[in-house]
Each structure stands twice: as C-alpha cells, then as structure tokens.
Amino acid sequence: MKKAAFGNWLRRRAGLLIGAVGVMIVLPGCSALNPAFVDLFDPTGGFEATIDNPPGHVAIAFVNDADVDERLIAFLESEEGGGLELTEAERRALKPRIRFRVQVDFVNGNSTLFEFVTGSKILVDPRFDATSVPDLVENDLENTVVLCDVARVQIVGNIEVFFPAQFATWAFQEATVNTGGFFFIQGTPAPPQFIPLRVDAVDQDGNTLVRRNIGIRDVPVPVDGPRCGSVVSFVVSGTLSSPFFRGIPGFSLLDTGVAERLGGRYEIRTRIN
Image 1 (cartoon, rainbow, N blue to C red):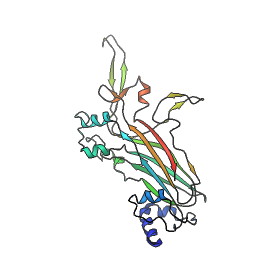
Image 2 (spheres, helix red, strand yellow):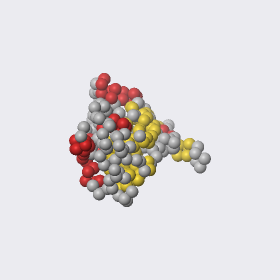
Image 3 (tube, rainbow, N blue to C red):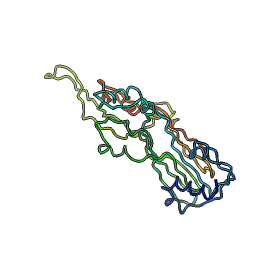
Image 4 (tube, one colour):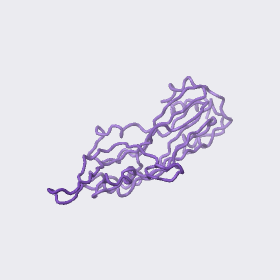
C-alpha cells in the first residue's frame, strides 16, 4: 500500500478526531508499523506492515471482554422481566454495555477527551425502548488514533455499565400493634440505566472493608509517554450481574454489602504494545 493511500485510509478511520488534533505536534514515524497497531485496524491481516510509517500516531483501544450472568439473562427472558427474545447467536454474543472517558494529554499542553462505549444494545427490558433510555443508543467507539507526541493516556471519571432491568430496593418495616409483624416495603423500581462501578473500600493497610465492583488492584493505570506507533488498550473483564430479592433484581436496604455490588464485578487492565 502506498503512503498516500495509507494516509487516506487512516484519516477515514480517525475522521472524528482530525479537527481536535490539528494543532498537535507531529513527530517522525517509525520505520515499520507496530503489529498491534495493524491488528487493531486490519484484523484480517491484509495490510502490509513493512512500509514506512507516516507521521507518528498512537492508537487507543477499549477491549470489552466482560460477559453477562445467566440468571440476569433468564430473568429478562421471563415474562416478569419483560419477555426479551434472543436468538442463540445473540445470546452467545451478549456483552455488557460499558462506557468511560479517556483523556489524552500532549507534551505541548493540549488535551483531548474521548468517550468510549461498546456492548450489546439489545440487552434491555423490552418494555423500555430507546426513547426511555437514550444513552443506550449512542454510537459505539472502541478505538481511535491520535497524533504524537503523547504525554499521558488515562481513564478519567467513572466507568459505567448499563444495568438492563428495573431494580428495586426494599425497606424493613418493624412490627406495630396494627400490623402484628415485620415485613418489607418495596420502593419505586429504578428504570434500566447506566450505573457507576465503584472501587472496593479498604483500610490504611489495604484490607478490604466493603467489596464493591472493582478491586483496588484491578483499576486502570495511566500510561505516560507512549511511543509513536504504540497501542494503548484498556481491557475490561468480569460479569454483569445483579442481586435478587424476592425473585426480582433488587436488594434489602438492610444488606448494604449486596447493594454495593449491584452491576457485577470487574477488572480493568491497561496494556501497551
């Protein structure tokens, strides 16, 4: 592939960011493209990786390796969960819909912010359509490319997962003279929505006090000074799941440990190739 052809192809793949990076510093490229860089944009292996690299780039990718708990899928497919209809192929391909923002800082002082999002849009209680949950229909963004020279790449703000069903909280009601016994009162169910994933609470020695969605050793770390031609990847693994109370997604307000784990358990790894 000629350099001009490659440049046109790369600009098409990175068209959303051309305006944002037009003022960034451009450094000379490497003598050959990083295989991880090539695989990211041409997984078929048809691209010739031995040509000279045009002005240097750093690729940034979000790899969603998470899955969905079978009990939650079964609930959504049940009548009580909305009767979601999935083919076997769709069921096997289900991925939690996850999003986060990545900030890219450049050595010249400029910064650019990207929102990465990917996962199954069809994984939702069918009684709540796109007009009810507009965040669910935003376009996917799994990878992007920026020009060198990059000072730092890091996730900023919350990592969020789309919880696809209503979930309810239950308050404990003590016995009174009138009721004659204790019982639980269900609050107004929350609709399907993106919820933030939270890191475990620990003491000063690193011992876990409250187990939440992400362990303190499983959080993403920033990448400082990635070289031109490299690929920075944020890899999310884990399982989208829910506590259940009285047969539906939810929890008793008495059980704060369960409430803290709504959304499942995840690991986020940072890789650079």
